Amino acid sequence: MEALAAAVRLLASADVLPGPLDYETLIPPVQTAWCRRVSGQNLWLFYRVREDVVYLLFVTRSPPVPAV
Image (cartoon, one colour):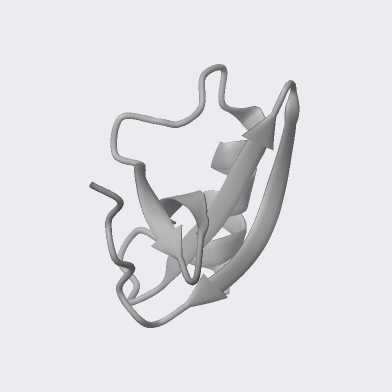
């Protein structure tokens, strides 16, 4: 849980999003979001950014499908 909390803090304090290790991913059937792997964990954190607000969508153990 501490690694997840640290990932959320990093998102909240980031000057620029998406970050260099984040990538856009598909959320079926037709949506996309940004995804970041939680350091040292088998967890992926999905989020969206609108203006200066970060929306945390969900966390999963399943690797995401990158948007191409």
